[in-house]
Amino acid sequence: MRPDQPLRVLGAPRLAAAALLCLGAVTVGAAPAGAAPGGKAGGDPGGNNGTVKIAQVEDSDTTPENNPHVGCSFVVEWYGYDAGADVVSTVTFTEQDPTTGVGLAVDGTSEVFVGEDRATGAGTSTGLDARETYTLSFTGDPHPQQGFHVRVTVATPRSHGNDTKTKVFWVQDCGETPPPSQT
Image: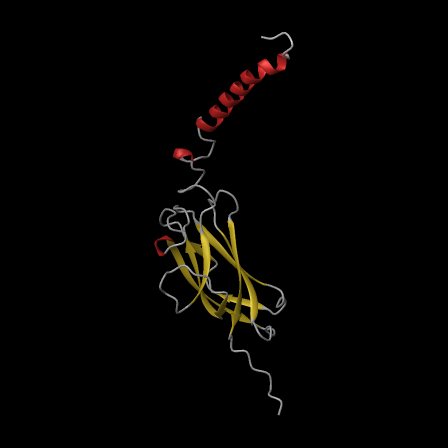
């Protein structure tokens, strides 16, 4: 040790080594409480699993795609959710601007079981967990070019993080009577 060298510099390597040792104990040690074996937090694989897609009724090829413009009858598809007897999605639909206040009625189930198998292939056909058909009806006027703007929300337990997924889309061709032609 040189007499002009500050004492704090000599202690820095020891402090750094102690910090790394503590950090290693945190990251290599036991999994946090509630974590699944292998360090996965509450799922297989761990994380905020699952995705929801909107499809036309006639799109039955189980390829996960979103269709932002569907008819009044359409399909909601669930992909990549965790397994479990309690993995049931609660489904709700709400009106969105610019067509809020039009009056919305839903024909379809409000609870869908999606926990039959482990979370695999959320973006592939092998990850398909459920398909449900819904038909919406409206009492007000649609947007003149787009139809009705709607949000579907599914709340599904067991996600590590947010348990809800949403999609906003347009519903068209609901048998609205066209405006009288002006001749």
